[in-house]
Amino acid sequence: MDTVLLTKEIQPQMKAILEGKYELYDMTGYEKVADIPGLDPATVRACVTKGETIFGADLMSQLPALEVISNYGVGYDGIDVAEAIRRGVTVTNTPNVLTDDTANMSLLLTLAVTRRLVELHEHVRDGEWETAEGEILATSIVGKVCGVVGLGRIGGAVAERLAACGAKVAYSDPIKQDVPYDYYADAASLAAASDVLVVSCFGGAGTFHLVNAEVLDALGPQGFLVNAARGSIVDEAALVSALKDGKIAGAGLDVFEDEPRVPAELRSMPNVVLTPHQGSGTHETRRRMAEVCHSNIEAFFAGKPVVTPVPEHSK
Ligand code: 8YV
Image (cartoon, rainbow, N blue to C red; front, side, top):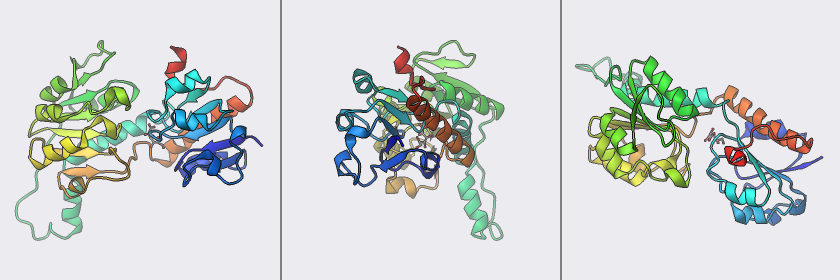
């Protein structure tokens, strides 16, 4: 059996598809590959990793036979792809299969935070409706501007959904400028024009803290922020301050800077809706992601070209 090494905390759906087909080793709980009982690091030609888990030169240098890193997810900001390419290691990800569910999560958070879904749910669940005087009113997105930061595959799917809900879509994107939505050159000018700012770009060094205090100020006291992309894109300390000071109206967040740790302030605010990085978290999508991730490993061991190499390989 071929050997496959899993980096830390790979979800069970992914593990399940590999079990029985490969000799599996798991780095969870170990700092060094050499510490994993029974594993000879020189036998590892394939690894499965996920999203933001750091996979840099340090880990690569512990795996002298490494040839393929199959990422369980579309975002691969934790992988030093330039270093992998330098070492002749192929990196793959799982695009397309999670686009719809992840876009649905952005829509869900947009509607949940603007329509005060969690507060309303608690109101009914806690028996307050029976004795309440007056109504709890929320904010409509109909006719409002929803600004999508990053109009890639997922951003495009988010835009379609927002438009279907009656919002006017605007966007910023470093590459795409030929799309029939209102284009803004940067996140700050997009935020200034938006009622809801929906972060949909990739993570990594190029977008680190792209949504900062200036962007949040531009969004304004009636504006909402939604992020189901990567925690690193939003300056979380600036977001906490903006929410505390009423500089923005609320936030719907699926991703955080230091997952699974979420600042206590965010956890206590009624105008913040939180989910634990679940954009792709459906049985169906996670299974499809696992299949794509596995198809790359399978192709590699069969001596065939991998199925979904990351775009850097074709540059
Ligand atoms: C996953 C993701 O939750 O695809 C991504 O980039 O962030 C998510 O789909 C994660 O990568 C799976 O572990």
